[in-house]
Structures are given as C-alpha cells and as structure tokens.
Image 1: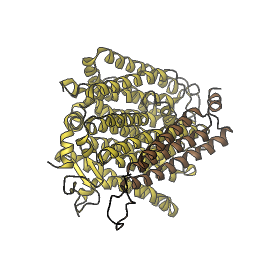
Image 2: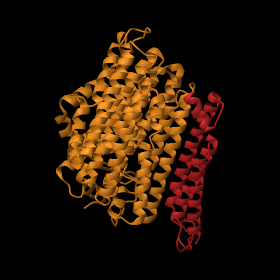
Image 3: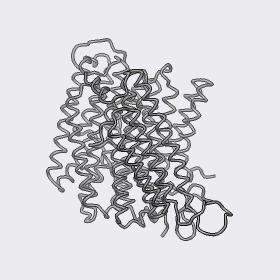
Image 4: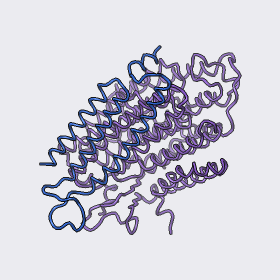
Length: 513
Length: 114
C-alpha cells in the first residue's frame, strides 16, 4: 500500500484517533501518553507536509472516501456521490500553517500545562481541534465542512473555558460557544438550501451548477454571515477578545489557526463555490469594507486594553482585517483581473502565514508572563525584563512584526496589501497604514509596561520547552521577513493563484475533463 | 403540501428560536432559543427530502416515488452536533452560576465593569 495516496485522510484521522486514545494511554503512564502524543503529532505533521509537497509539485490532490480507488471521483454520468477531500495549493498552504501552529503549541504545552490542572484533557482537546482544522482545510464537501466547523467549535470552546476554576473563562467560553453555534446554524441552513436546489453537497459540483439565482444569493449571504462570525470580524467580534484572552496560551495559538481556517472557508466559498466573478464587485466591496472596519475597530479597542492577553487578542482581530482587506481587494477586481488584484490576494494570503507566526509568538510570550507571575494585568506588571530576558525579546520581536516594521515579516505582506489597496482606493491604504502605526504605539507601550522599569517581583524564567516553541516561531518571523521572496515564490504565489484563477482546475480535478 | 407545511414550521421555529436568543436576558433562555432554532434547521433539512406522494426510503417497499434519504442522514449528524454544543454550553452555565451566582446577562456584565 502506498501510504502517500492516503495522506489527506490520514492527516485528519490520525489526530482524531490520537485525541481519543490519549486519555487511555495516560491511564497507563504519563510518559506513554507523551510518547503517544509526540508520535501522533509527528506523523500528522509529516502527512501534512508531504501532502503540501505533492500539491505544490504535481497539482490538486483528490481523495474519494469509500471509492474502489481514491481517485474515482465520479460515478457514471459525471455525478460525485461520495465524500471527497480536495487539496489544492491553498488548502496545502493552510495545512502548513496549521502544522506549524500545532507543533509549536504542543512543544510549548509540554512544560506550560500542569498535571494537576488536567494536562491530559487539554492535550486531548488540542488534538481534536487540530484534526478539525485539517478537516476544514482539506474537505471538498459542504456538509463535511459544516461537521468539521462544529468539531473545531466544540474543541475550541472547551479549550477557551479550560480554566473552569476561574470566573472569567466559563463566561468567555459561553459567549464563544453561542456565537459559534449561531454561525454553524447559518452555515447548515445554507448547506440545506444548496442541497435542496442542486441535490448535491460536493463543492466542485455545486460550483458548476450555481448561476446566481435568488436562492444562491440567500445561501451566499448565510455562508458569509456564518463564516465571518466564526472568523471574528466586526460586528461579530465580541467573542474573540474574550476567547483569546481567557484561553491558555497553548490553546490561543491554535485558536488563531482555527480562525484562519474559517477565513479559508470564506475564500473557498467566495472564489470556488460561487465562482468569484459571479457576485464579485459587490461582495468584494463588502469584504473590503468589513476588513477595513475590523482593523480600525480592533486597533482602537486595543488602545484602551489593560489586560495583556486581551490586548494581543485585539491585535489578532485587527490582523484578520488586513487579510480581509487584501483578499477583498482581489475579489473586487476579479472580473477585470488587473495585475494589482493578484498582488492583493498574495498579500492577504501571505499575511495569514505571517499572522500565524507573529500573533502565535505574542500569545506564547504572554503565556510565559502569566506562568511566571500569575497575572496579565498591565497595571500590575513591570520590570519583567530582568528575569524573563528571552520572553521579553520574543515579545518585542512579535510586537514589531505585528505592527509591520521592516525588515520583519509583517511588513513583507502588509506592503503588498498597502500597494494594491492604494490602487483600488487611497483611503483604504491610508486606514491600513494608520492601523499599523497605532498598533506599534499600543504594543510598544505594552512592552514597556510589562518588561521595562524596576523589578517588581521575582519571576521564574520560562522552561526550555516553552522557549524552544517561542524560538521556532521567532526564527520564522525573522526568516519570513528577511527572505520573503523565497516564501512568496514557493508557497504564497501558488496558493494565491489557486484563488485568482484556480477554480477551473479545481472543478476539473473533481469532475474530470 | 406536507413539504410546504414542514418548511413553514421550520422557518417559524428558526424565527422563534433566534428571537428568543436575542431578546432574553437569561443564559438558560438563550440556550433554549438556540436549541429551538437548531430544531428548526433540522426540520428544514428533513423537509428538503420530501417528495409528493412519497413513501419512506426503504428498499423493497414497492414502486413509486420515495423520499430522499440523504437529508435524514445529515439531520442525524446535525442533531448529535447540536446536542454536544448544548451540553457543553450548559456546563459553562453551571460553572458561571457557581462563580457568579447569576445567569442574568446584564448583571454579569455590570459585575465585570465594577
């Protein structure tokens, strides 16, 4: 048996099995549990990376579940009846982001989580969330998409409310759960409408049938609403700072991946399912407007935060705005296909990778602060730089990258977004630049408040595993900023092309011909 | 006919549920509203499988049209998912009640500010 043929399903099934087997191994011995977790994570990451290599070198990978051969996509008559996993360059790109975040989270969690605070259960939920995110990114079936969306919702909310012995996490988890459920409900209704109209759930098949009737518009509206809600864009952003703020650090960075997977779902719906050009200018402008609004509101809210993780959370929400802005600009001009549309999509897609590294690094650094002194209130923190030298350095690096200071990675993708949105409307670029400047001010103030000044309390330095996880993300931040051309050429450009003009290839890979 | 009635009922349940979710101030009421709305969505999916004069989709039940079995399979999955989300949300209501001794949203928010 050639294992690589089955890589798409293995990347989902193995962490799923790994999650539910983990507590059993923990019953035997802790070391066995850690060994099992490491083996599952290593195998999953290997599958995701190998799959990405395949997708980037030899085109779209299709895997049909339950068929005699994984590539038997359609039955006689050209109709796809089975559930399918379809991995194009964009899915593979998202899979790589998920892999990086997942591995960083796991390495960090090894020493960050405490045994007496339910480490086993947190790891179980992590693997469940990880499997769900891979599923969201690889699936080629609308109902399957809904199921994975709900798997990630449940696992993510359980992680947000993980510290049940404190009073705020359950509240954040409840809020998040209610909004996720509402978003999932909208997606389910849209799936039902599409199935009622076209009698199929396969994304490629639906895409080949959708012509822009009224029901299609209703379905598009419901999908947009549901996915934007889950991605935490204004005006449905209230859950995001609570969720990011209260989740333990190792979970917060996987939540970033979860949010990005919802955004990926949005791109997939807009560009592949609804064929991009169908409603492009109006929906594109809507996405641009929401993106601009999101980044503006989030940055302004960040200014008044006094809680370190909530401050980073608003920073994370603002970055979602930049991604929406970039890809939205591309969608707006999709029908004419001018050069700057592709640049905009590249910027938006590249920013997803940069956001994962930067925001991930900031959340991990904030987690190290919380672990060291048991507080994340900026009014009470100060002088931590004396004891937490590495953590302080990582935080400063992440803050500068988030604000888009050259030569770090945030600048590399933001410059693409600035340039291209300027060509659509100079006001958009002005708002985007203004947002970055405000972010810089906010985060420098936070760094100064938490790490500089006289030593207030004795803080215990972060253990090695946490430093390794932060160091890995920091190296990524620097590497992405120093040689953006390399990453653009090999990872981002193929992924952006999959959105820009990859719909026909996607349909051909699934439906044949 | 039955299909239209079911679709109408489903829409009514959705509106009722979402209205409750938005208007009520108590967390338990909000969850009830969400659950009623999920029920509406499930009914909507089942109604999609309706065919005029159709029988249940069971092999060997004679000729003639049969209802579409796929939405029923989908609904089973959706019901299980909604059960899981409801259960998890209720757990958080229990924890919140233990910590804050209230399930009233305005009260919870006031305490947060103060």
